[in-house]
Length: 140
Image (cartoon, rainbow, N blue to C red; front, side, top):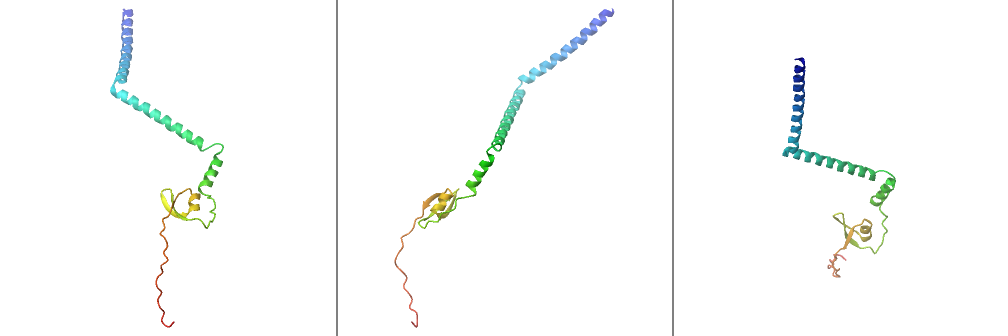
């Protein structure tokens, strides 16, 4: 009799564990094959890919801004943007309209070239030799 009770209790206990495990596996399969789960999984994968891209880009940017040669790059940039070449005065320079970065300035042609602008000749009107009549001064 004692054996029978032991066998029945062990059978009930083992079957309960088996049933609980089967229920957990079934829930996992249902979630895996449901539409919401697929959408959630795609969102997670997309977020992981974007995070990996952002991290790689940050590391690449950090590598470009550090390491050997950076002081030389900064010095070259400073020289190009701030320390412009001195303007050589040339009396034959004409005034031109110079387009620099979307702005139109009126400079001498050599100044425009030094600032890496696009020069265009100004349209001038011919000079006339007609002068205004002089007024007669009284008492002269």
